[in-house]
Amino acid sequence: MDDLRDKYLTAIADAGDEAALEDLRVQAVGKKGEISLKMRELGKMTPEERQVMGPKLNALKDEINSALGARKQGLADAALDERLRTEWLDVTLPARPGRSGTIHPVSQVTEEVTAIFADMGFAVAEGPQVESDWHNFDALNIPGHHPARAEMDTFYMHRAEGDARPPHVLRTHTSPVQIRSMELQGAPLRVICPGRVYRADYDQTHTPMFHQIEGLAVDKDISMANLKWVLEEFVKAFFEVDGVDLRFRASHFPFTEPSAEVDIRCSWEGGTLKVGEGDDWLEILGSGMVHPKVLMAGNIDPAAWQGFAFGMGIDRIAMLKYGIPDLRAFFDSDLRWLRHYGFSALDVPTIRGGLSR
Ligand code: DAH
Image (tube, rainbow, N blue to C red; front, side, top):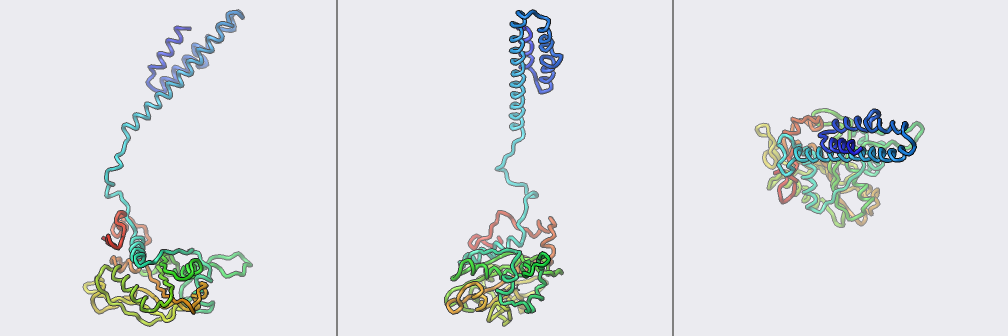
């Protein structure tokens, strides 16, 4: 028995891999292994002999089994150590340029606009993309028969048969976030609301999903003058020019009175857009003084408070600023397009650090 123990314990300690260990296990304690055969011989012994040999054989079997287990664990640990030694990665090395992703122009421009308005004291507010038709229309002074409902090519959500409530809609603009912000925060209030909006429309300048950013300021003694100043500051900062002429054109929106569409001076000389010079005008947003009915829908007393609001297309101003011709390509997920028009993930737009440099 001592010979058997020496033989196997030495072999186990020397085994170089799991396969060698398994061979040893079969040889020693497998069904026809040496120790198993010895145990079978117990049957032929006298009871006295068996009382001595039985426990000894069992102890030897246990000893060999636990040596096998310990060696197996040792081999696994050594294999892991070896992997850790060879498969290491220096995470402080710079990323490979070809492998790094880019920031989508929509995200970049949203960050730029947010940085500019944050600097003027506007907080970011959000609302749901599946919106009640009350928030999307009625609260904004667009009643059921109003032509704006048809004009917006609204996507309606499904209602179960027999459910008479008006269906929810995919919001057609970010203006309902005005109502939600007023409901939530009350006056005074200064928010911008970027997000996705939806209309059933598709051509070179329209996609069924696109992005808008809404602005709303409610306070005492707010006037058109405040609106003009804020928008001028915004346009100068966004297009990164010192001076820019804005043209406020009388217009009509149900949720503002008076209403104005805002154009910026630009030139298309040589086929490229230059903001701030030339004799052309480019429409960039809609705006106005918040209609008293809209303030009331947001539980704000129009006798005590006034506000201005504006809304613009994020994708549209991204196309203008960065010279991107086709809106549809924004949402094609074409890697070549994303590499060409995308922005570095490490250049976060800030007012002082620069928006796009
Ligand atoms: N909601 C309008 C649209 O989608 C844009 C708009 C115009 C928003 C005037 C405003 C505003 O807040 O005052 O066409």
